Image (cartoon, rainbow, N blue to C red):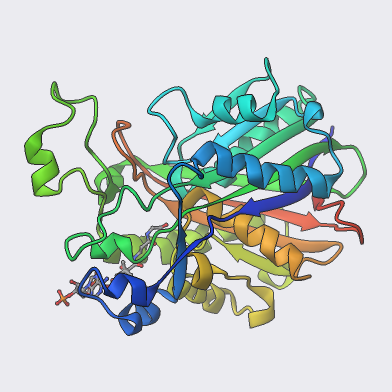
Length: 354
Ligand code: UT7
C-alpha cells in the first residue's frame, strides 16, 4: 500500500509587520502583557488588494512545488484548510485551483480551524493510501486581522492572531519506511461556543443587523482560559495516542512542531513530554497564531533552518475550535500526526514516514 510523502513545504507571509507596540497605539495593552501571556512579539497583517487567502495559499504552494521539483500540472487534488475563506462560498480551494491553472481537479475545503492542516493531511492521506491519487496539494491559509477588532473591546483576540499561509506537496511513495505514520483526529461539539464567531450565521432570518455590529456580537469570542486549559490536556492526549498507535515513546520524537497557539501552551506540552529545547520548534514569536497556516508555516521554517534532519521522527499536534463568520456549528477539534521526515540535501524532499 502506498504511503504519503510530504515531498516539500512552503510558506508565505504578508509584508506588513505589526509589532506589539503598534497594537499598544490602538488598545489598552502592553508589550509586556502580550509577551508574558503568549510569547508573541509581532505578527503579519494582510494588505488589501494584494493578499487574499487563496493568493497567499498559491504563493505558499508555488514555494512548495519549486522545492519539491514538482510541476503544478501533476497535482490531482487540492485540500484547502481555512477558517477565513475569501468568500462564504465557493470555498478557497477552487480559487486556488483557478490561480494555479488546474481546471477539473477536485478541491476539498476543510473547516477544522487550527487543526485544519492535520485534518487536511488525514484526508489527503486516505486518498493516497487507497491509490486514488498520487499527488495532492495541501494548503492552510488565513486572513484573520480583519475579523478582529483592533480596539480595547477586541484586545483579547487581537493580540493573538495573525495572517499567513503554508502549503505541502504530498506524493505517494512505495518506498519502505517512508510516509505519514498515522493521523489522529477528534472533535467535541459540546464546546462549540467557547471559541466562535456566530454572526452572520444562517440560524437567524437577518444574518446581519445594526445591533450585531454595534454590540460587537459579530466579533470572535473566545473563552481564553478555558481554551488554554483544554489545550494543555488534549494536546498531550492526542500525541500520546499517536505514539501508542505506532509503538513509539516520547523519546523517539526528534522534533515536535506544535500548532502555534500560545508559547505557554507549547512550553506546557514540551514540559509534559520532557523534551529539550532543540526538540521543539516555535515561531509564534514572529507570526502570532495563524490557525490552519500555523503548522505548515512552522514546518517550512523549521526545515529552512535545518531543524528537520533526514530520518527524523516529527510529531505535530493541534487543537482548536471554530472562529469565523457564520458557518454553523462549531467544535473543539484536535489532531496529531506522526511522521518520520527524510529530507535530502537539495530542496527536494520532506518525506514523512511510517
Ligand atoms: O488556536 C487556539 C486558540 N486560542 C488559544 O490557544 C488561546 C488560549 N488561551 C490563552 O492563550 C490565554 O487564555 C490568553 C492569552 C488569551 C489570555 O491569557 P490569560 O492569562 O488566560 O488571561 P485572562 O483571559 O484570564 O485575562 C487576565 C486579565 C483580565 O483582566 P482582569 O479581569 O484580571 O482585570 C483581562 O481583561 O488580562 C486582561 N486582558 C488583557 N490585558 C492586557 C485580556 N486581554 C488583554 C490584553 N492586554 N490584550
